[in-house]
Image 1: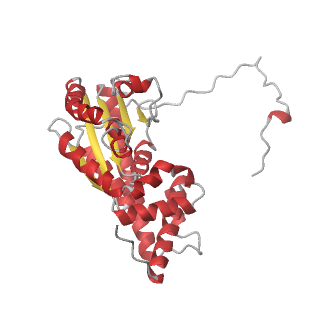
Image 2: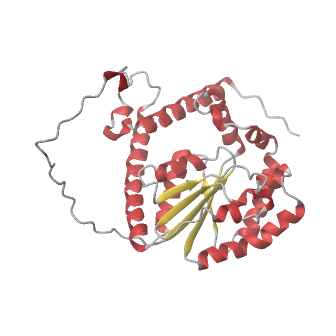
Image 3: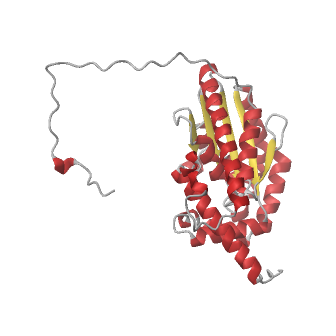
Length: 309
């Protein structure tokens, strides 16, 4: 086994700066201070350079534009009864959750929902392997995003020994036919693999370790994935080779740059759907109806949440 070369002080400073920028970026997006542009300049202590602030402005402008297109896509899906399944796979910390969050951020959760299934329970382990995923497939006018999917069997289950060789081979015999059935039933199926480098995953894990708001994302399985990097690589290569079909091809997303990955994935997703803008009737706010015999009942102050802010 080859040992990792020790990093230099300059490399350590670069990594620290990168972690600081990632933290600020994530908090800015959560708070949506970027809407009026002030988040880029309001904090004089921010370590961001002019070039970084300019890049962030461009990123947010394009993200909001693409999210506007996603809203149009959503309206079209509802109006036409289209059905979509979008699978997001990749190594731990590859950015799957980040792009899913940006896709769903402005959409109706009744139309676009996320399926992030936990490990199967004792009953589910006795079922047909795909059975628990079938329950989450969309009806007409729905989009389902799978944050990991039935491809768990080709990845973590294979590497960690959670399935037998027979189950593993049966998965590869079945999954092409299963996905063909989905497509024939009228479901549009998109599959994305988020690809990151060894060094990038290492850095993102460090970010999670040092960010108390992200430590929950690190599971013992995630930590094992660092040790078993090469085994996961071999499993991924076999999976792509055996499940990349004409009906359900894989699309690989370069994900070392989180923001570029999000924009590229969303842009590609939109290009795969022949959606068009749906005309909506003009919205007219009705007048408030008032009744002379109505009076509002007083509410005890003790029922109100204290105004701490």
